[in-house]
Structure formats: structure tokens, C-alpha cells
Amino acid sequence: MTSVLSVRDLRKSYGAHEVVRGVSLTVERGQCFGLLGPNGAGKTTTLRLCLGLTEPDSGSIELAGEPVPQRARQARIRVGVVPQMDNLDPDFTARENLLVYGRYFGRTDRDIVERIPRLLEFAGLSGRGDSRIQALSGGMKRRLTLARALVNDPDVIFLDEPTSGLDPQARHLIWERLKQLLAQGKTILLTTHFMEEAERMCHRIGIMDQGRIISEGTPRALIEQHIEPEVVEVYGDGVDEWCRRAASDSASRVEQSGETVFCYSSDARPVLARLEAERNLRYLHRPANLEDVFLKLTGRELRD
Image (cartoon, rainbow, N blue to C red):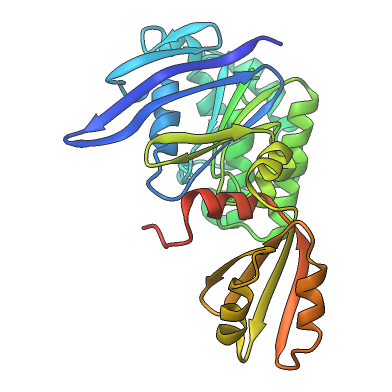
């Protein structure tokens, strides 16, 4: 494989606050790389630096074979971007949004017009080409923004929280479309707060916190490296007292968040046996997942 994006020791400060603190990452061609982290971790700033939209303080970036920011404009010809917030032009129809955006890449109107039906079909909007943006639902707007990012037939697609605010049906449709793009050999760099999305889509993941990548690997490798394989979630009347007793059991690692107790263990059978005698407690036994890794590495406290 060859890398489509290579970042080395990237740094960016705003005043005394260092937002990106020595980030290094490599995204291979044809893969989906997920950048996860709490609010304020530096994910969006990192994407802007990689695209040449923000000037770095130090470090090196190569995107689509071009040095950034020196030749960022040339690199972006081969890149599609889905921003965190939709920025479609409300004065245009869905079709006109695609046409006008395609012109920024030097495409002829004829070429863009030929591509528009396929793009609308890809986004599940075949019958909405003449609709004004105000007439589209939130899910439709998000899918149109994805279609717009493909108008230049990019090799690399940057997706900043592409399914935020969408209902499950719209989210699953976008996941299906992203898998189609990967099957076509496209490369995706994805930021998301949905751990299920990252687990489903990403070949590799970098977990970012306080401006640094604190762990990187495949979803399965991250889970195996950081979390015990079995998790029991416990809740109900008396859970506080049960938590104090469970914490004394060295066979499990116990954490409490609000009214839920999480027991992490290599063998959950002793925990489950004790719970069977607790009439007022409910519990869920499940395998460890990426959300467990995320919370262990970045903490459970709320970030604003």
C-alpha cells in the first residue's frame, strides 16, 4: 500500500493554547482512518491543517502526493470534504449546488451535468434535484453534502462527523454509501463521536485527546490492548452498595458512572452468579467495545 496522507509532528497553537501537539499519522490508500476524541481534542483543527486551510506552526504534511500547505490547492483538487456543519447554498436547488461546486475544481459544465444524476442517485435524492435546500430534511441535506464532496471524483474524502444529528435510518444509509466508496478504492479520513460508526467503518483508528494521538491501531487491536474482554453493566436500586462490594473483588475492574456500574473482567461468570441473587438490580452482559476503550483513555467526565 502507499500512503495518501502522511503527517509528522504537526503542531498548532492559538495564543498560549497548543491545540495540536505533535500529531503524526499515516493514512493508506483505499482505507478508512478514524480520528476519535472528545470535544476540544483537536480533531477538526487537525483536518484543517491537513487540508491546508490552517497554517501549522511546525511539522510536515503530504496529501495526495503534494506538500501542504505549500501546494494545498493542487492537493485539494483530488480531495472531497464533508464539513461538520452543512454549508449548502440555500438560494440554489440541489442540482445547482452540485453544478456550482463542481466549477471550483475546473470541471466543465458538461462534465458536471453528466455526473449529477449519478451523484443524486448515490445520495438517494434522484427525485429531488430541483428541490430548494429549505425543502430538504436534515438527512437529505447531509446526503447532498456527501454527494457534493464527490463532484470532482476525489481520491481522498475528509468527513468531519458526517452522521451527527441524523436518525438511525439516515445514518445506516450513509454507512452503506461510504462502504461503496471504499469498495471503489477511495480513501476516507473520518472524525466521529459514534463509536459504532468507527468500529463498522474504520480499518485503523487514532484516539486523540488534548492535542495528541494517545493510541492507534485497528478497532479490534485497540479493544484487546486496553480493555478486558467481558463487560457487565449493572443498574437499579442498591447499585451503590453493590458497587462497593464488587470493587473489593480483584477479579474485576469496577467503575461507576452515574447510576450505572461497569464491571470489566476476563471471566464474568462470578459477577453474573452474584447478580442472580440481587432482586433489585438489572444487568447487561456484553463483549467489550470501542466505546469502552474511548472512555478508559479519555475519561468519563463531560467535555464542552
